[in-house]
Every structure is written in structure tokens, then in C-alpha cells.
Image (cartoon, rainbow, N blue to C red; front, side):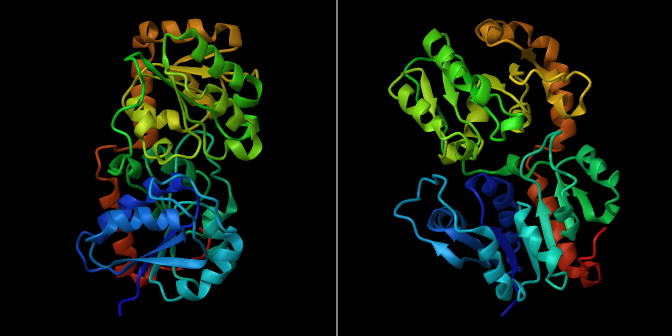
Length: 377
């Protein structure tokens, strides 16, 4: 039996669209054995449905696999503890030719155990605030990043050039979107509000509840309130705010549905409202109006971490929110060129070829065992 390439689906469902297109591309020629390691029955049901007919692909349950009563709709599940799962997975990974992951926690394994097969880390999300200095990233044999600009940030940190490969934005090739249209009663412009989950980067704790209520009460827009899946961990009141808005014909709330991670909302929205989430860059793959909330009073203009805020108006006072949303379409031409440049620099190729490029990198790693060392760059 062929030794497989192991893909790790151990984290939140938001990771799936960044990883699964590479599975499809690698399986296309049918000569590579591929194991998809899943942490829950939600992951299992989604991947089983999509991978039917893919040559060489099998679904495998991690030790500690969590069976849940539902999951076919891809709602984000409670996960088994990651570190114990990884430790118990080691004997299985020793039999793999390579391991592919989309999150950093899995990189504790090659960092602690450099004799493991080579790890390939693909990006999930992009943006100027990415944690590029995390030492776990140096344990990956190859880092797949979307753009040459992103690659340059790692080379500037001393990563070897053959270990950081720009492929384009993998998620742009994800085909399994769950919503083609949004469930609103009237055809109004759609605002997507997507606050970040980390308190120091988010507008939620200062202005979030007020923001969604102002837009909902105003009535000029249809509102999709779809924050990062992890926001509720630090802000459990989010669910109550969503419950209070239930039944409003111009509001659609989502905190754990698959549509909030598969690109459905960023594709359908007319206007983006947020803070520092990398979702805006995905939204800007097709330039449209943006408004950013400076709830923390940040002096952002000369800070490269806030480069995306040059792509739309920045609101410093919540009283100015509705006026900013109203004028955003009219002033958008003044931001369109910067949006296109910023998105291209951040995402690289969004034409759908990124998974094939990523698959070629993995094949090269399999065909050239001498490149498979895991020493730090």
C-alpha cells in the first residue's frame, strides 16, 4: 500500500476552504494516496460528500474523534482538544510521506519532533497583521503563501527562499459554497459586518452591538452580521444580540454556519464594514465600497499593520457610522485603484490556479526526498 500524504482537518471549519482545493488538485492525477484526517463528524460528512469519486482519497478519524448529532450543513462544531489529538496522531503520521495543514498548532509536531515527515503549511487568511514571527512556522518544510509580497515578508525574516512558495489564493478555487443568494425579504444593498475575534483588533467590544442595531433600525440596508467564528469565545453576548435581531427581515446573523467561511457572504455583499479582519481582502478581490471602524482610537495612518484601512473611509465616532455607509458608494471611485492594488498584492493570483501550484509543490517534495529535512530555516 502506498504511503499517503496526510491532510489535517483538525480545526474550525473556516480552515477547510483554504485546504480542500489542494486535496482536489493533488488527487486529480490519481497516483497519490491521500488521507484526510478529520476531528469531528461535521468535517467527516462534508469531506465525504465532496470527495466521492476522487481517486486515492480516504477519510480517517483522528484519535479522540468527536461524533456529533448533526453536521451535514457544516455548522462549526465543538472540537476535541488539539494537543492531545496531535500527540495520539503521531504513530499514524510517521507512516505518511508528507503532512499538510492550514493552522499553526499542528506545527508543534515537527518543531518538537524533527524526524517526522515534512510538513507543508498553507495560509488561511491574509493581511498585514498575520503572526509571521511565530516560531512554529519555521518548523514547516514548506510554507505556501498567496502572494509574492507575503513571501517577501518571510524572506525578510530569514526564511530560506525554497521554503516559502507563492501559489496564489487557494480559497478562491473553493467550489462548495453553501449560499448562492441571501435570504432577505427586499432587494436592498447588503452590508457585511465582520468584526475580528481578538479584543485588541476588534470593534466589537466598543461599538459592535450598537453598530448592528443602528443599521438594523435604520432600514436602508440589508445587514449580514457574520463575525469571526471565534468571537463568541471571548464575547458570549454575541449570541444574545443575534437572538434579539431574529425575525428582522433586513438582518441575517451567522456565527457558526458554513456560509460565513466558504466565501458566500464576501461574494454577495455590496459593502464591507469591519475592523482588521482579513475577510476584507477576500472581499476586495472584486473591489467594492468599504468602511472601517476605528473603535480603539488607533493612530493608524502610518502603521503598516493597518494598510487595509486605506481602502475605504475610517470612522472614528459611532455617530458617523450611518452617514459613512450612505456615502460609501459615491466615494468608492476614490478608493477603487488602491483596493485593486492592495488585493492583488495580498492575494496574488485569484484565477483558480493556486491549488494546482500548491499540489505541484507537494509533488516536488515527494519526488525529491533530499529536500524533505525539517531543520529550521
